[in-house]
Image: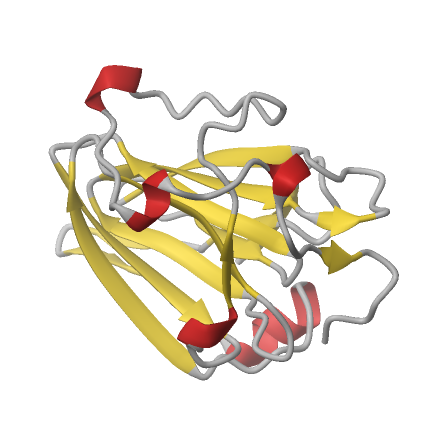
Length: 189
Protein backbone atom coordinates (compact mmCIF):
# COMPACT_ATOMS: atom_id res chain seq x y z
CA UNK A 1 0.00 0.00 0.00
CA UNK A 2 1.06 3.57 -0.65
CA UNK A 3 0.49 6.21 2.02
CA UNK A 4 -0.09 9.76 0.75
CA UNK A 5 0.26 12.61 3.23
CA UNK A 6 -2.29 15.42 3.18
CA UNK A 7 -1.92 19.05 4.25
CA UNK A 8 -2.95 18.05 7.81
CA UNK A 9 -0.54 15.89 9.80
CA UNK A 10 -1.88 12.44 10.66
CA UNK A 11 -4.63 12.53 8.05
CA UNK A 12 -3.48 10.23 5.23
CA UNK A 13 -4.78 8.72 2.01
CA UNK A 14 -4.08 5.04 1.46
CA UNK A 15 -3.86 3.51 -2.01
CA UNK A 16 -3.70 -0.28 -2.21
CA UNK A 17 -1.46 -2.13 -4.62
CA UNK A 18 -3.87 -3.65 -7.14
CA UNK A 19 -3.09 -6.80 -9.09
CA UNK A 20 -5.07 -7.02 -12.36
CA UNK A 21 -5.29 -9.72 -14.99
CA UNK A 22 -7.87 -11.07 -17.45
CA UNK A 23 -9.91 -12.50 -14.55
CA UNK A 24 -10.32 -9.15 -12.80
CA UNK A 25 -8.35 -7.77 -9.88
CA UNK A 26 -7.18 -8.51 -6.35
CA UNK A 27 -5.94 -6.26 -3.59
CA UNK A 28 -5.38 -6.39 0.13
CA UNK A 29 -7.75 -3.79 1.59
CA UNK A 30 -6.21 -3.91 5.06
CA UNK A 31 -3.16 -5.36 6.79
CA UNK A 32 -2.71 -4.61 10.49
CA UNK A 33 1.05 -5.10 10.24
CA UNK A 34 1.51 -2.81 7.23
CA UNK A 35 -0.88 -0.19 8.63
CA UNK A 36 1.10 -0.01 11.87
CA UNK A 37 4.41 0.19 9.97
CA UNK A 38 3.30 2.95 7.61
CA UNK A 39 0.53 4.90 9.41
CA UNK A 40 0.25 4.35 13.17
CA UNK A 41 -0.33 1.74 15.83
CA UNK A 42 -4.03 1.18 16.40
CA UNK A 43 -6.42 -1.71 16.71
CA UNK A 44 -9.72 -1.55 14.88
CA UNK A 45 -12.60 -3.08 16.84
CA UNK A 46 -15.71 -2.32 14.78
CA UNK A 47 -16.59 -2.29 11.06
CA UNK A 48 -19.57 -0.26 9.83
CA UNK A 49 -21.27 0.03 6.45
CA UNK A 50 -23.86 2.42 5.07
CA UNK A 51 -25.73 2.71 1.78
CA UNK A 52 -26.91 6.12 0.62
CA UNK A 53 -28.39 7.78 -2.46
CA UNK A 54 -27.16 10.76 -4.46
CA UNK A 55 -27.23 13.99 -2.49
CA UNK A 56 -27.10 12.40 0.96
CA UNK A 57 -24.66 14.14 3.26
CA UNK A 58 -23.67 12.49 6.54
CA UNK A 59 -21.67 14.54 9.03
CA UNK A 60 -19.75 16.14 10.45
CA UNK A 61 -19.49 13.62 13.31
CA UNK A 62 -17.06 12.61 16.05
CA UNK A 63 -17.08 10.86 19.43
CA UNK A 64 -15.77 12.49 22.60
CA UNK A 65 -13.23 10.81 24.92
CA UNK A 66 -13.05 8.33 26.41
CA UNK A 67 -14.88 6.95 23.36
CA UNK A 68 -13.10 8.99 20.67
CA UNK A 69 -12.60 7.09 17.42
CA UNK A 70 -10.11 6.92 14.60
CA UNK A 71 -11.62 5.71 11.35
CA UNK A 72 -10.30 4.07 8.20
CA UNK A 73 -12.93 4.77 5.54
CA UNK A 74 -13.56 3.68 1.96
CA UNK A 75 -16.29 3.59 -0.67
CA UNK A 76 -16.84 0.13 -2.16
CA UNK A 77 -19.69 1.07 -4.52
CA UNK A 78 -20.23 4.43 -6.18
CA UNK A 79 -18.43 7.66 -5.30
CA UNK A 80 -18.32 10.00 -2.30
CA UNK A 81 -16.54 13.17 -1.27
CA UNK A 82 -15.04 12.32 2.11
CA UNK A 83 -14.18 15.19 4.47
CA UNK A 84 -12.24 15.42 7.73
CA UNK A 85 -12.05 18.67 9.74
CA UNK A 86 -9.37 19.32 12.36
CA UNK A 87 -11.22 20.15 15.60
CA UNK A 88 -8.20 20.03 17.92
CA UNK A 89 -8.03 23.38 19.71
CA UNK A 90 -4.46 24.71 19.58
CA UNK A 91 -3.63 22.80 16.40
CA UNK A 92 -1.87 24.81 13.67
CA UNK A 93 -4.51 23.43 11.26
CA UNK A 94 -7.55 23.93 13.55
CA UNK A 95 -10.72 24.44 11.48
CA UNK A 96 -9.06 23.31 8.26
CA UNK A 97 -10.26 20.32 6.30
CA UNK A 98 -9.16 17.76 3.75
CA UNK A 99 -11.61 16.51 1.11
CA UNK A 100 -10.86 13.34 -0.85
CA UNK A 101 -12.88 11.56 -3.50
CA UNK A 102 -13.27 7.92 -2.54
CA UNK A 103 -14.78 5.53 -5.05
CA UNK A 104 -15.10 1.92 -6.14
CA UNK A 105 -12.90 2.89 -9.09
CA UNK A 106 -9.97 4.48 -7.26
CA UNK A 107 -10.06 2.12 -4.22
CA UNK A 108 -8.61 4.87 -2.02
CA UNK A 109 -9.07 4.96 1.74
CA UNK A 110 -8.75 7.84 4.17
CA UNK A 111 -7.42 7.46 7.69
CA UNK A 112 -9.17 9.94 10.02
CA UNK A 113 -7.41 10.14 13.42
CA UNK A 114 -9.07 11.02 16.70
CA UNK A 115 -9.53 14.78 16.97
CA UNK A 116 -11.28 15.22 13.64
CA UNK A 117 -14.93 15.63 12.65
CA UNK A 118 -15.83 13.41 9.69
CA UNK A 119 -18.50 13.36 7.01
CA UNK A 120 -19.18 12.52 3.39
CA UNK A 121 -21.47 13.45 0.51
CA UNK A 122 -22.71 10.97 -2.09
CA UNK A 123 -21.79 11.99 -5.64
CA UNK A 124 -23.04 8.90 -7.50
CA UNK A 125 -26.55 7.46 -7.87
CA UNK A 126 -25.88 5.32 -4.79
CA UNK A 127 -22.84 4.59 -2.66
CA UNK A 128 -21.85 1.90 -0.21
CA UNK A 129 -19.45 3.26 2.40
CA UNK A 130 -17.40 1.21 4.86
CA UNK A 131 -15.34 2.25 7.84
CA UNK A 132 -13.24 0.61 10.48
CA UNK A 133 -13.27 2.21 13.95
CA UNK A 134 -10.73 1.82 16.75
CA UNK A 135 -13.33 2.34 19.46
CA UNK A 136 -16.92 1.17 19.86
CA UNK A 137 -19.89 3.38 19.06
CA UNK A 138 -21.07 5.20 22.18
CA UNK A 139 -24.19 7.31 21.49
CA UNK A 140 -23.89 9.21 24.79
CA UNK A 141 -20.49 10.53 23.60
CA UNK A 142 -21.55 11.74 20.14
CA UNK A 143 -20.46 15.15 18.97
CA UNK A 144 -20.88 17.02 15.70
CA UNK A 145 -20.43 20.31 13.92
CA UNK A 146 -22.49 21.85 11.14
CA UNK A 147 -21.83 20.56 7.64
CA UNK A 148 -22.34 24.06 6.21
CA UNK A 149 -20.32 26.14 8.70
CA UNK A 150 -19.28 29.19 6.62
CA UNK A 151 -16.06 29.58 8.62
CA UNK A 152 -14.93 26.16 7.37
CA UNK A 153 -16.35 26.59 3.85
CA UNK A 154 -16.53 23.01 2.59
CA UNK A 155 -17.53 22.55 -1.06
CA UNK A 156 -19.46 19.29 -0.86
CA UNK A 157 -19.77 19.17 -4.69
CA UNK A 158 -23.56 19.07 -4.44
CA UNK A 159 -26.20 21.70 -5.20
CA UNK A 160 -27.17 23.18 -1.82
CA UNK A 161 -30.89 22.72 -2.48
CA UNK A 162 -30.27 19.05 -3.28
CA UNK A 163 -28.49 18.09 -0.04
CA UNK A 164 -30.31 15.36 1.89
CA UNK A 165 -29.68 15.43 5.66
CA UNK A 166 -30.95 13.50 8.65
CA UNK A 167 -32.95 15.52 11.14
CA UNK A 168 -30.04 15.28 13.58
CA UNK A 169 -27.50 16.55 11.00
CA UNK A 170 -29.65 19.65 10.43
CA UNK A 171 -29.18 20.71 14.09
CA UNK A 172 -25.41 20.79 14.70
CA UNK A 173 -23.62 23.98 15.84
CA UNK A 174 -20.91 25.79 13.91
CA UNK A 175 -17.35 25.05 15.02
CA UNK A 176 -17.11 28.37 16.90
CA UNK A 177 -20.24 27.46 18.92
CA UNK A 178 -19.38 23.81 19.62
CA UNK A 179 -19.70 22.91 23.32
CA UNK A 180 -16.82 20.45 23.28
CA UNK A 181 -13.71 20.03 21.09
CA UNK A 182 -10.43 18.14 21.36
CA UNK A 183 -7.25 19.55 22.89
CA UNK A 184 -4.32 19.43 20.44
CA UNK A 185 -1.82 18.87 23.27
CA UNK A 186 -3.74 15.94 24.79
CA UNK A 187 -2.62 12.46 23.77
CA UNK A 188 -5.55 10.86 21.98
CA UNK A 189 -4.19 7.28 21.70
